Image 1 (tube, rainbow, N blue to C red):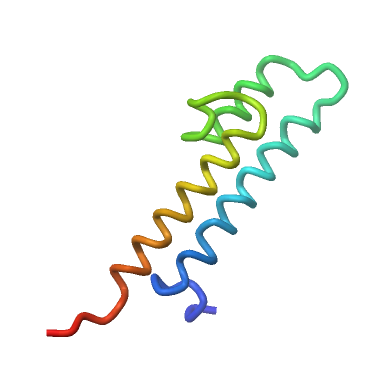
Image 2: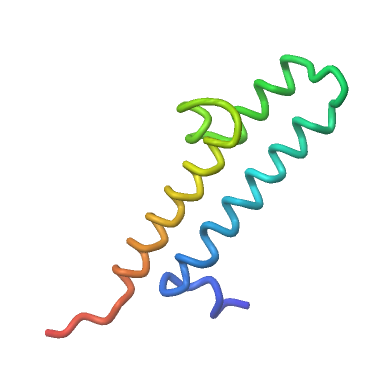
Length: 84
């Protein structure tokens, strides 16, 4: 299992983990249907930080995935071998 979570494979596993986290946050919010209380919405927005600072709807999930992909690509770039 260790070999899958390397910096070289970060563009794959990091967005997948962020998507799972955001999906679970949406499941938490929608578990209060019908009549979602304000506290559940507030906690859901906290779970989806930093994307929830931008707007509502599915935009935070897209922002978080794009951010995770960018961080994963930076990690992959930093893991590539250097030629001296």
